[in-house]
Image (cartoon, rainbow, N blue to C red):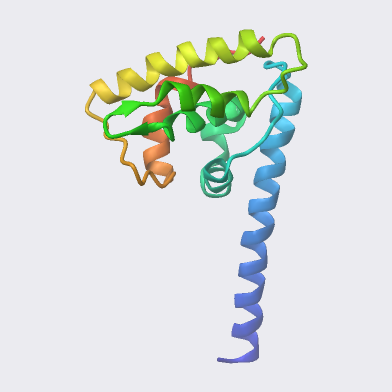
Length: 152
């Protein structure tokens, strides 16, 4: 490989890393501007980290705080059913319990996410035990969840 080809390869690789970092920064900045969910601590789970790095910014940027809740809930779906106890515990980990609106927010999210999750499953979408967070799967499962959501 020529020196020029090596340099171009390195440049492209560094550009991809920079784009991913910028992408995450944009999402976090978008959440900071929204201020629509008091109590949400902005924590990314490992699956959300993967999704943020791989998905198109326009698909989740305004709603990623809610998408994190959806994504956390869907991980509690195994063997054709949700483990509601585990889901509630995992969802609460996304919130700062000292904030006064946390319980109201998480209760609302559980209710809304349950409606959307059930609708997705009834429509024939399958959630496998080894759900990978691939963008196409995430987009399909999340259409009902974050795209129609409005924040004040």
